[in-house]
Amino acid sequence: MAQRQVGIVLDPLDSLVVAKDSTIAIIEELQKRNFQIVVFEPKDLYALSGKAFGHGKIITVDVSANPYYKITGQNVFSLDDFDAIFMRKDPPYNEEYIHTTHILDLTTARVINSPAALRYFNEKASLHLFPDITPPTLMTKSIIEIKNFIKLHKKIVIKPLNLMGGRSVFVVDEKDSNANVIVETMTQMGQKTILAQKYLSEITKGDQRILIFAGKPIEFQLVRKPSLDDHRGNLVAGASYDVIPLRPSQIKICEKLAPFFQKHTIDIVGLDMIGDYVTEINITSPTGFREIGKGASIDVLSILINNLNLSTM
Image (tube, rainbow, N blue to C red; front, side, top):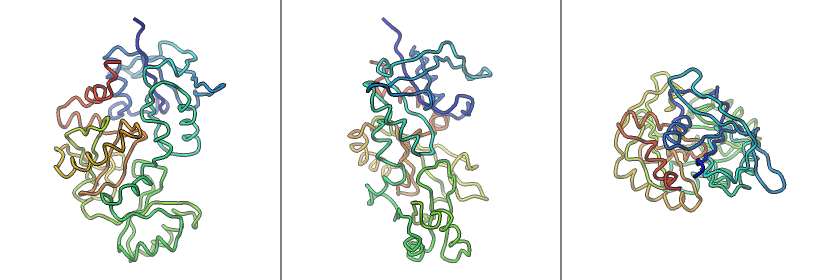
């Protein structure tokens, strides 16, 4: 029986932070299960006459070594030949990212997450599909509407639609003398669409990351607490974290969202919450696997691969 193969579309291997990176953790688990791992950067992929191909590197991973990966072969691969392909390229979510999903659309292999879902459901814009479980949220490039939103809610958060890790996230209140310049800069004088949300004071207790694999939530969450000199609950922005069980109200929200994720073949989700509100639905390359696994003493990666049914393919 031929060795099973999994493809991973990712950022350059040398750019990944070994101790924290969830994509490396996925590769480690697949390696334990005797999958051959082939990695591609988006620039390695191409479509020819209706078929998807890529210049791939066969690798093995050992996080105790430096470098942590070893390239054991290189070849041109038909993406149809893989048991599954993980799309794990980090944002920015831009035109080139979208073109990568167009290429992935052409393969008959299972792609995790669905290329169509990655295109259609922006991690922040998709909040508007679930207004009953999200804070008051505005998506616009209109400076007038953003100013009206500030007046209505007194204090808001402004985010770009295409970045991650808390980059370019601002808290603005109606008394802030910099409010106008922040709004003008973020919208590029009314030319760029942004997301604004009512500020939730519960952020001081932590921003909550919940992992959902194939519609099933991990029973523990990552609670990221902003540092004393920052408002962002992102680990890359200096937040600290705890790992605690999900609350019953959070489980109900996960159950509400599960049919949507399953319908659109969104198998790996990082749900961000503040209090009982969903603030982002991360589907590009959600993280937190290692932190939750370590903090809860559970094997998050084994749960992932089992939930995806890759071990029985």
